[in-house]
Image 1 (cartoon, rainbow, N blue to C red):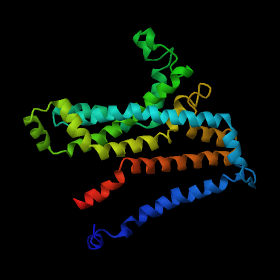
Image 2: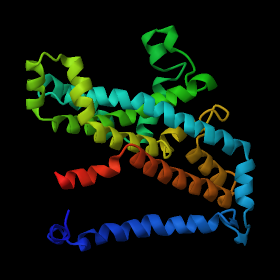
Image 3: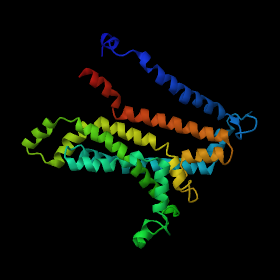
Image 4: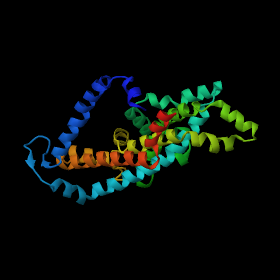
Length: 294
């Protein structure tokens, strides 16, 4: 895009309110957290200089180390679960048939519910004594899903997927509908079936949609808190104590605000590195220039 074309675009002042709000509610608190990570503070008493003590304490804390591992595991498993399901549902719902529109409305219902409401509902459904398994008379379902350390983590992954797959499905549906129908018609005339069209047309043309959705899934996995807090509270034991939950428990249960600030900074840095890394590795940073050159 040339400078002359740029000059005809909207003024940068239109972004001023958003930039101002982002600065007040995101950047300023972030600097406060960075400063607090070098201090001792229990949340009520005086603040004292701690140097790098909080960083050493966080690195040596076994609960935080476990939380780092669980967060990485949760991120990988969530993306592996959500990405293919969202992609297939999005491509399916991109069809113009009326029954697909009805199914789409049903699939998108979880977007209307708050994370706390979803978590409370699943806690009730998965209750080993009064949940869905007992109500339906199915012994295999009457397990202590959230009380078993071997099962609780994967139940959390499933509930997170149930909550967020509709959002990513919506992204894929919008992307798939942008693919010109003439391409599919030409491929059908050449004898391509539905499977060949999916792998040779749909997937390549959804490349940047996949990058966007995967980046949102990956970075979003670092922010899961309220849903897990209501579902398990980090338990049983530390089986679902991911970093956001570890940050909360360190700050508001152990009253170590400085150490909790260190965990918060780690989450911010890791999130930025992952987002920028995915953008560079997948070539999404070239998308804008390609669109400008079209």
